[in-house]
Structure formats: structure tokens, C-alpha cells
Image (cartoon, rainbow, N blue to C red; front, side, top):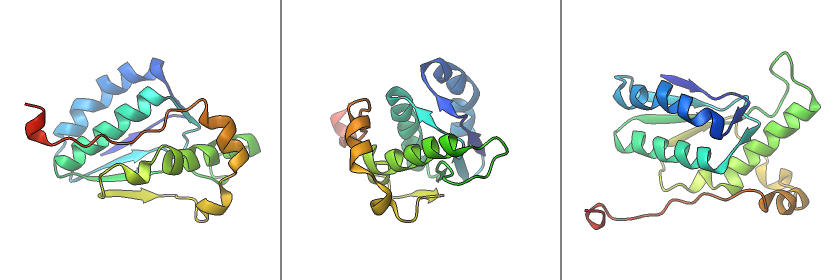
Length: 147
């Protein structure tokens, strides 16, 4: 099963996303669920938190989770330099600032990662944008603590 995320994933999109995908991806007989973020240019904090928790739930339900990160080169017909730049920033921030690589779930399979992520990360852009973004980090809690 593949879940394709549009260029923007914000509060106005979340209810439709839940209606369309939540139950379906939890109930699918497919052994893997692909989150296709290839066109993603912007995602809000609430939506990334929801997406991460859904991915984690799928892995805990023994599904293989594949995450296709935003594409950082011209691949779509309407791509221009600004679009590619926004996707590059989304790729870097999802992986590095939002800690997608450190969600506590080692079973995520990433596609389209920027190959030289450390050298591409611009500290000036990081400090400009980090005030507008809430980094996500999983809160570990033992199951019996929640009962």
C-alpha cells in the first residue's frame, strides 16, 4: 500500500488524510506501507507528529514502513529551482532536525535521502527556520506504565 502526500500537508489536510488512510493502512494485508513524500515541500508540526506516530504503530503491528523522502532534483514536470529548494529543505529538516532518523523505530526504510546531508545543511537556514519548527522526538514509555 502506498500513501502519497501532496506538496503541503497542513491542518486543513489532516482530517481528510485520517478519513482516507488511517483505518485502511492499519487493516491492509500488505506487508509494507509506503509513505511517499517525494513532492512534499511543507509539513506542519501537528501533521508530522501524527505521521510519525502512525508509522510507529504500523511497525509495532509488524508492517514494513518505507519512507520516500522529498526528491531533491528535477523530476516532476512543473519543478523549478524554488520548488526543488523547498523539497531539499523539507528532506533535510525531516531527517535531521525533526529527527526522523531517530524516532526509536529502526525499521523505517528511507529512500531519496540527500547523500551528503551533513555538508548540505546550512547553519544559517537552520537557525532561521528552527524558530518556526517544533522538532519531533519520540517519548519512550513502557506499555505497563500507560495502563
